[in-house]
Length: 202
Image (cartoon, rainbow, N blue to C red):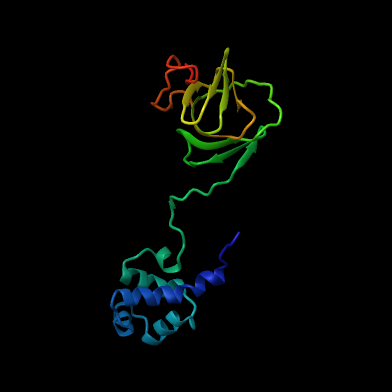
């Protein structure tokens, strides 16, 4: 994985400062007058001959009216990007799509292909689950019910009921899952009485 070193980050500060100054239409003399930093120091900072320090960057950030992180190219606090780290459990792969504490958690779940059909081993735990099949054919065993959900179908159920998810035909299955504690649930419901491939009741 490519990770920037401290030297890489510092080396990129000078070109970023020069580009920012030119974008604002300022000369080194203008910048020196507003920051109190000498023109020669600013010139050496932009050319990389002078390493950036907090004492130099703070007046520049105030003059440009930008966060200090913008000057050094650091990711902002609260970066909305999610760094996906797959979790492997029960022979399946779970990719977290959310990271907020509490509330509903979102996952992409991948059930691998199986040469031989697996014997369902239903589990129970506290919570409520909503799922949507992206690819493949999902076998959902819920209590006494044994359902097959093709791509595009959804189901929701109380996880205190014995349940099990697997492949209906031995192929790979990909689905989205929303999971929350009791009282936190998705508002979309699949009607279990519409067809034989529908979601289940609570």
